[in-house]
Every structure is written in structure tokens, then in C-alpha cells.
Length: 445
Ligand SMILES: Nc1nc2c(ncn2[C@@H]2O[C@H](COP(=O)(O)OP(=O)(O)O)[C@@H](O)[C@H]2O)c(=O)[nH]1
Ligand SMILES: [Mg+2]
Image (tube, rainbow, N blue to C red):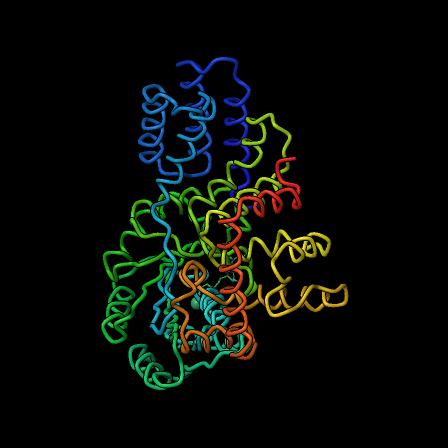
């Protein structure tokens, strides 16, 4: 789906490495040429392609593989790392009160993305609102209003006004007290014209937005770079949203533009609906693009199933005494089958916290509860998942709102987490218990 062609050619290049008898300079040169061709075909900027391929070649020829890593694995890792590097750092929009200004040319997906962002923040428990700053086309007002209705968030606009700055100011005033995340849509043109830049500057001055998001169609091609740069010069872009990644086999132009501006890609759009929206993580994106999972499996001839390995990793981390909500989430996924859930429950001193020894009829309600816990965790931020101790009353309220549950459910989850954490800590100190648990879960069989 996303950048299919590029993914396919890069994957076959990596397979070439994985299947090579010798890793020598001829193979490396071959591989670098393949990568160049693949990237250029996907519209990645020529200069960027040359820089990247030079780096890959130099590192692959000069660096020795670290202990325990084969030459093949090492070269694949270098290709992967350098591709992740051009996408820049990963960044997550903060879950807090803020004003977000959307910019971009006409038809790139700004208005649609306003709705997607509103739905995203709503799910995180904040109260978003949409402001129609695109006053040039009457249809733009209707479109945003309709989107606001769809995702059920308040909307402000003035169909008759000819003054975008005034409308935006009125919108901010209206939502100042009742909303947390005010998302301001702006108008685009077919190309960057002086009056558009002026209007953008005025809105920028009037709103003092915390975030300035550039919305860019992934199919935009080579002209994406100069375009993004012009927007960045005007409002200082804090993040990029790449849209229509569902529809394009290319997308390299937009990726180059992101590299050129140096602003992180924060979200990608993969369809027309409010839910067709994903947080962007460069490492995850490139792994998927390269099919790193397949490549890894190819490299390690070992026949362990991926799920088993994930489970083992999670178990090891848990045993090490570190236990975050991410671990608990993974663990719940791992244990979704009743059988294994029961096994673990029986291993825990006293069964599940708050209950006596687990009975069969209790298992159903436990499964339901875990399901609810997962929904609650989906409304948390990464930061909260990593360090649940920061979750105090205002955050609890926000999370509950996002998950559509009561505050007490969130508190219950935190209580459960704390008990699990204590239990895990106890387990990690008890070697016999640890061995037993590993055996019960059938790891490393
Ligand atoms: N397939 C697909 N279409 C999208 C996506 N984002 C926006 N669109 C469509 O692109 C068109 C232009 O979007 P719009 O939000 O009006 O662009 P704007 O002019 O920048 O506000 C609309 O038909 C949207 O439905 C996306 O991620 N995938
Ligand atoms: Mg629009």
C-alpha cells in the first residue's frame, strides 16, 4: 500500500544481500546502485539519493560488523539506519492545550486532516475545536463544518466574511475557555502566491499557534522541496503531515521535502476517512517499507515464530524488574488466549490481584476487564505509558474522557498496574518462580 514500488525494489535488494555468498565490494556497489535506482524511481530528490548512497557505500566498505553480527546483517542494518536517518527524528505532538495552524497548497488534504487531528485529540481525551480560516472558497466552510459534524467537535466559521484573520480571531475567542486543541484551517492556492503568503503571515501573527503543520500530498513529486521550504520560511513549520499515502506508489518527493525542511513528519494520512490516520515513526515506517521482519527471518535460519520471540523479549524485560504500561499492554496481547491467561494467573501469588484463586467463571470477566484496560491505554500518551507515575487527576480525567469510561476505571487500571509491577518485581527476585513461569509459558522450548 504505502510506497509499494519503492518497498518492493528495496526488499529485493535486501534479499540479494541476505542470499549473497560473499559480501564484497562488488556486491556492495551493486546494492548501492539498486538502491539509487529504487529511490530515484520513487521521486526522491537526486541530491539526497547521491548523499545517501555515498554514505551507505562508505560505511558498508569500511565498518567492521560488531561482534555477533554477520556481514550480511551488518550491511542490511546500515541501509536501514541511513534510510531512517533521512527521515529525521521522530516526534509526537504533545497531548495538551494548544493552537494548531494548518498550512499547505490547495487540494493537499488540509481540511480533511483537520478532522483527523480533531478525532485523534478527542481520542486522547482532549476537547478539540475547528476554525474555518479558509474564507476564499464558500465550499471550504461547508466542508469543514461537515467534517466537524462527522467527528462531533465544535466548529466556528463565517461564511460571508472576507477577512480570514478576523474569523480566526473570533474562533479562538469563542473556544478559548471551552476547548483544549483549536485547529485552524487555512486556505491554499494552486501555487504559492504573494497574497497567500501575506494572509498566512497575518493569521500566524494573530493566532500565535503552538504548532504549524504543513500538509503535503505524498504524490507531490520533485517540486515538493522548494514548496515546503517556502512555507517553512513563512511560518516555521513544526511538523509535516503526509497525505494520500494510500494512493501513491511513489511518495519519495514528499519524503525528500521533509528531509530538506528538517521538520519531522508527525502523521500520515492513508485514506479519506477520519480514522485513516497514523502517527508517523521513521524507524517503524522504514522497517515496514523494507520488510525487515521478512529479511530478519531470512537471515536467521532459526525457525522461531516471531510472536514467540516478542513474547520472550517482553518476558525478559518484565523479569528485569522494569515494567511499564507498554509491557503490560504487550503482556495482555500475549495472554489474550484464556488458557495462557489462566496459567499465569495461577502462577501469581494469590491469583489476580484483588481476587482469590481464579475460577473458570471469573476468567470471562477478567478478559473483559483486560479489553477495557487496553482501550484506556489507547487514550494515553507514550510518555504516560512509559511512566504511569505522572498520571494525576487532570490526566485521569482526560484519559477517561478519551476512552469513554469513568475516572474510577482509569484509577482501577493504575491500581492493577501497580500491583502487577510489585508482583513482577517479586518474581524477578525469585529464581525458581522465574524458571517456572518461563516453562509454563513455553518460551524457548
Ligand atoms: N485517498 C486519500 N484522500 C485524501 C487524503 N487526505 C485528503 N484526501 C482527499 O483529497 C481531497 C482534497 O482534500 P482537502 O482536505 O479538501 O484539501 P485542502 O484543499 O488542502 O483542504 C479530498 O477529496 C480529500 O478527501 C488521504 O490521506 N487519502
Ligand atoms: Mg481546504
